[in-house]
Amino acid sequence: MNSPTSGARKARSTILQSHSNLWFLKPEQLDAIGPAIGRGSVWLKEDIAAGTASDPFLFESFDRRGVHLTALAKRGAVQIRGRCGRRRLEAAARGGGPRAGLCQQVSFGESERGAWVRVKSDEPLSKATAAFQFANRDGRAADPDPIFAGLAKVGDAAVTGGIIRARGENKRSLHFAALGPGGGDLGYYVLDGDLNLVRRTTVSSQAWLKKNAAIPAGVLIHEASSILFVSDWASVSGCRRAIPPSPRTSRSDPSAWTRGLHRA
Image 1 (cartoon, rainbow, N blue to C red):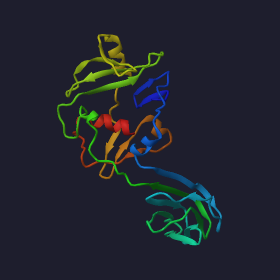
Image 2 (cartoon, rainbow, N blue to C red; image 1 turned 90 degrees about the vertical axis):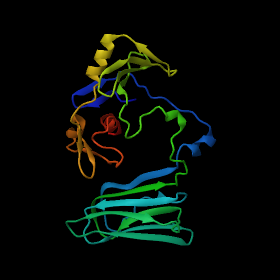
Image 3 (cartoon, rainbow, N blue to C red; image 1 turned 90 degrees about the horizontal axis):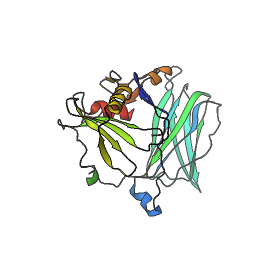
Image 4 (cartoon, one colour; image 1 turned 45 degrees about the vertical axis):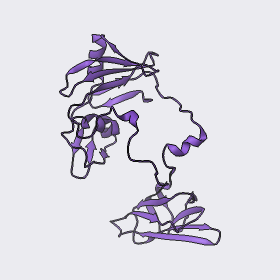
């Protein structure tokens, strides 16, 4: 945890010390921790003159490639062009009218190859964004590693949870107020840098943690298409954060409230 402030509405707790760390691994381990991805925008809410090509974006060496285009476009077309030697790839997205604007995802097939790609519009654009999203296929199995066997699964009712927070004052540890399925106290614990979980009987520290780092209520709004996360910091910018819903979770899930806040 590297943010000086954590929490949301009615639940703010200042962390005076960063708990970030570096993870060193061998080069051959890189391919085992997930597929390679490539992301970036050649336009980001920019006003673009007609016929102006974007900076080049690396296009080769990914299995799945696409670009998301948005703009206050009129009826012109936005061209996506690339070249590798004599080979050329081309795709286009078209605005839906002076009011509808442009909002379109363009995907590239495996046969479309090229070293670099550029984006160009045949007419002026306002607040244009061209965001590329590339990724290789993920060959990892869907089954979790046995080390996660102790974590609650979706649908489990008799689960334990609680409130966990990174401690300051150079203590280099986490403290944890454990709660049972009905919200009852199960004890106060401290986890050190060697992953030793030790139960403590410090009643004042447990009470402080439950009061100052409590999971806030009323910040998740369930809708048909998404779960909205609303908090003080979100309302400052005048917007709400949307969390993709999952058919495997529901409002009655005993741990959904903690997972929802974590995702946000």
